Amino acid sequence: MHGDDLVARREEMVRDQIAARGIRDPAVLAAMRQVPREQFISPGLRYRAYDDSALPIEDGQTISQPYIVALMLEAATIRPGDRVLEIGAGSGYASALASLLAAQVVAVERHPGLAASASERLARLGYAKVEVHCADGSGGWPAGAPFDAILVAASGPRVPAVLCRQLGAGGRLVMPVGHSSWDQQLVRVTRRGDEAFDEETLCGVVFVPLIGAHGWPTGER
Image 1 (cartoon, rainbow, N blue to C red):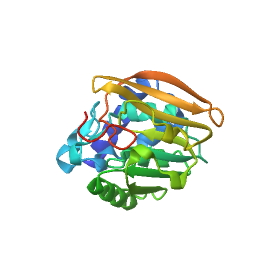
Image 2 (image 1 turned 180 degrees about the vertical axis):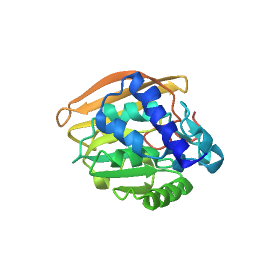
Image 3 (image 1 turned 60 degrees about the vertical axis):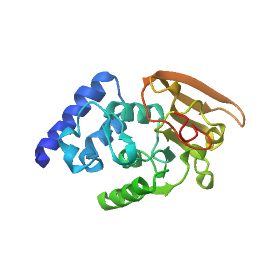
Image 4 (image 1 turned 60 degrees about the horizontal axis):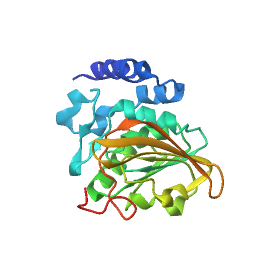
């Protein structure tokens, strides 16, 4: 598929899959138009880059459906001066998008191969505001806290308290929560005070499990 075709498919994706479903934030829509999703999947799947679906990447993980990525970014209300933490960097697509909205993005990925390839890819494509770390993302990244927004691209049994504590005042955390792969809800947590958090449910979703000390133990799901 030629470059012009991919650009046209990307514009169609934003119009038909994202804006048509109610995403209104101009900065999110502009970022979705700008970031080439085909660069974040394997060459053999690039013809499907703008499908309305998640796609497989390495290590049994997935790159999320474009609409869900846009929904999470809009729900996090990321502003130009914000510092963002992403848990579950995968191939780096959502981190690239977030970096167009924020001042800095810290991305954590537990799979060493994915972390290394995401870091290389983001640097090669010019997304210099993203730093990628290989670690147990269920515990966040305390060394970089507090964050204005936290995006978690994997589903846990609950929102880990350790992540909530890494939000700054007024910070927003967006994450899927559920006790099975077919019963998950996307939730948003907002920090209102030292120990005061509001939680609201946004919609039903399907994500890979959040594996780690503050998520699902290896092999439990």
